[in-house]
Amino acid sequence: MLDNDILAAAVALAGALQKQRLLLATAESCTGGGIAQTLTSLSGASTWFDRGFVTYSNEAKQEMLGVPASTLATSGAVSEATALDMARGAISHSRAHVSVAVTGIAGPDGGTQDKPVGTVWIAWGQKLGYAEARCFQFDGDRDAVRQQTILHAILGLNARLK
Image (cartoon, rainbow, N blue to C red; front, side):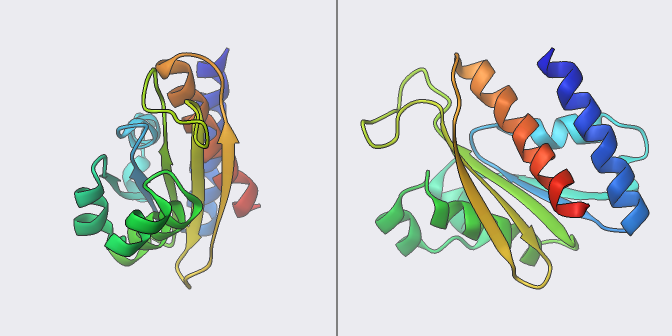
């Protein structure tokens, strides 16, 4: 069921991006490029998908997206501040007009009492510097957390492009 939901959301996103003549960039940590893979599986994606950044390590977040070391040190990789910096960094390091960024704990380990497995921050950015983020708590195993993250990242883009 989730795969069909993801595909439907991706097709809707492709239509909205094409209609508005916008380019998209993704910045992914916990999904490991799954959002970019999903979107670029659609024919014609090259007209609206600019690039994807897979920034799994903190070093990659800093080097590829310009996330400040201070943000990672004070807030952690899985945080609102990091997700927002990733979304803005995807814009500033690409030709994209809009972006989505995800950082989270897919499990099965890595969770803490404050940030349990399934904690995911998704941020959406725009060319003029505006970005917003939302925290999700997803259930299930590693694959389920990743699939839910992909779905909600795309749904969030769709909602913001209406």
